[in-house]
Length: 314
Image 1 (cartoon, rainbow, N blue to C red):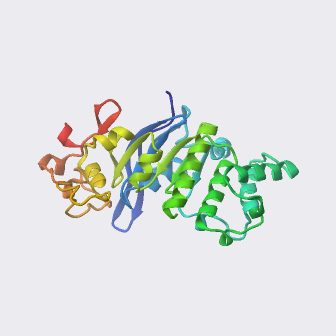
Image 2: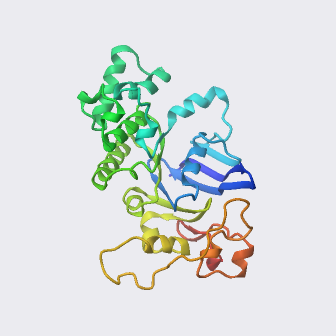
């Protein structure tokens, strides 16, 4: 299946007092139409920055972004508005991403007005249809965000993103601020909408249980780099990179002594500001050798659709 989104050697650096912070560094991947790519890693690894750079909420330092075969790395102003319509985002914190002065109805109606998709009574009917689709009762149309719980607020964020019929959505930790029972409802809603509309998702999270549930394939990020990329089932059954193994071993299981001999990370985290030339995971890796400290390992294929950036597989 042809890739709907293709990212090649994407970099996003931030200028700081002591040099350049490498938030996203030489990242490449593809997402096929209608599939979900999960992006996982600990806080600060560059997951959200990657998603926002793809959507041009942050401008890339270098690299290439292709959407449906078209280069959108530096889109002309004439096509930028249409690009915004086709690529949307669901933010992590629904409370801070919603305008507290706008009702549910006004929030969903805003993108419809911006893109001149509907007007008058037709617009009101479309808002009612969208609210019904995402599970918001009609009585909530005139409610404000502070009057609703977290699950309903996130449904508003989802409704706003879906209102303009996008093709691609970045889901930036959309359930991390919600209770477990509400998380399941939101995940099921996202999957139902994907099946109905053929949407493509980039699902950013640090929760491995969530990413396993929703993703077709997974990228594991560490300090701005992708260290492993694989179909979801393959990654959980045969993790290869030491960091991926450590992440999976950190998931609690309700069986005493079930994870004896697991990977435990020690050592200092490499600074993302002017990082050294070697593998950024080297100071914490139990298999570190001299070449790891000197040379960044390339992301290489070790089996069908399974890629790892580690000198153990060179």
